[in-house]
Image 1 (cartoon, helix red, strand yellow):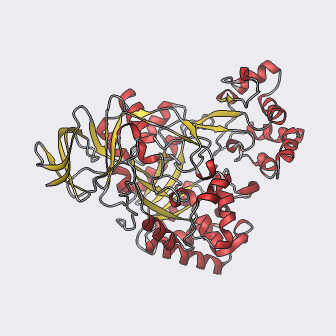
Image 2 (cartoon, rainbow, N blue to C red; image 1 turned 90 degrees about the horizontal axis):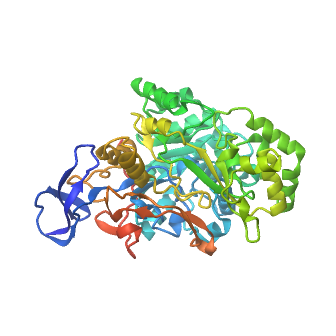
Image 3 (cartoon, rainbow, N blue to C red; image 1 turned 135 degrees about the horizontal axis):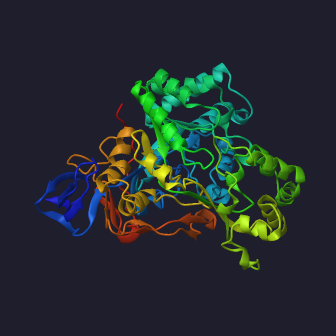
Length: 560
């Protein structure tokens, strides 16, 4: 007798092949049968009118710290995600010496928008090395399946200490870093991740450690990964690394290179098309490269106490270096500071979150006692009414009203024609949720449900079969994750049950459920009727977690 039978479902199995109506049976955590009559089961669910698909594989998350106190990786499973890849951009918490713990958390607070009090109160430090970190995750249990990169910034800090954010590494230090990378990949890391993006800065505006690395260091560490015969090199790129250099690294290491991020930028027409075309040309030359794309417009809530969207600007550095509120007000009031910011914004840049479109920054909420007439109005219109430039209005408002006004910025990925082209490209990987990070800015953990609702059902960008495949079987294949992403006999029973006519993501809301009561934004699912990981139900209807279910597995073995 089977453990579970889901009957009368519209089965979209993650292979991209045509959907069909039928039953599916699960035993011992795996799909064991499907068809018109799969036999008796201890539990039966009637799925008439609903679609059954593999769970979503989210390849770009930052749950590294959160998983030590929240094995549920909230809110991702409640949004259809059954496998998460953590450690992207090199922002990991392992390896980490005890003396470097607070520095690691302070940097994450800044670059990933996490609450320092939540991190200090929440992270469980039962490890030093990367293998010990994996052992800890496995020991305490998981709700989703988890695969982890070993991160460059952590490796650099582990070997170099404070010098990791001061200088290039010596030859001996690079050799020691290479040993750490080899050890991590051998122990079960999915690969090696890093960043050169100018917006990735730690506390007080100091660049994250990986941004101090030489070209030789990058190549040595990716080669160390490649020597194990497996692993993916993941890079969030800025102005330092060009695609030609990344193709050279792919050729030298004989390993796949995954590049983030290809986003629509109004200052650089066709940037997604051109970038992905270059990856396609590299693949034709035998060098495997993939580009991470997002199906969501990039929107971000922020206050002027921590305006992440401006921090890739070189001219914003004085504000990032401000030690307290008074010194930050002084920076904002500076005419020289304002002139430098205006001058930099006037010049288009290859990589930048904010492109000078002041009409796309809206006042979301003023603090108690504030002028509510400002709410839902753009900075462009507010500045026009006041006879000011938008930057001056924004900085004057911050200095005068404090730093508690909440703004929302609609930044990149707003051209749906360009975005849609990227979503269906032969070298694209749909991801970039950043789940687990930027918790006070946005919540894109529901990207997969958004794809199925907005892009598949409403826009008709592709078939339901293709949409599901690009969220499940395809990322599992690209990431070399075995036995997942398809509802076929012998594969893991990672599943989501949903209504194709209702599936989507509701509006975000702010909750205070992090350690120490710190806030974050979460989103709710629409049309989702259940999620299973390894055959165990973890989410009931409309995203409600099943208490004490922790069937997830740490993925430590990968296809070559």
